[in-house]
Image 1 (tube, rainbow, N blue to C red):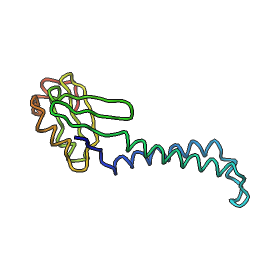
Image 2: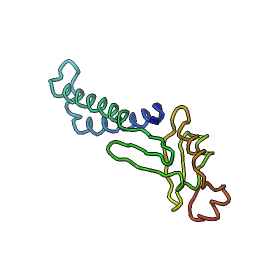
Image 3: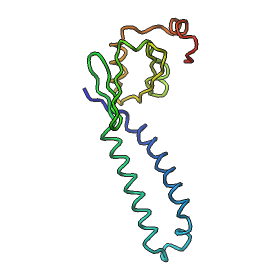
Length: 151
């Protein structure tokens, strides 16, 4: 089953990136925008058009190529052309408190590595992981087994 991350959180991250991109682009071409708007030549309009087209393209590409695929034995995370696979049997701890607080699924693998996934709108991914991860430890057991990992 294909599950998409929450749209609001994704747009929030993209807005920050778009604003940073605008700051960089317009800081390099600052002198073109100093004249009154009725005296602008074609260059400022081309810069604004390219920036707007790139922003819209980035948003569309992100929404079309970022999703989760939930299977019986694993979760496949698709980010652009990259695919990451997380087997339920490798997940030893899921931080439920963090998910309830900010809708980010934080889980730890049996090697002690932390992974973070953006939650979906209907909590399908989170609930599926809770049901299918059979090797989960309690918080105390996890802290004893992995003392160097900070929760």
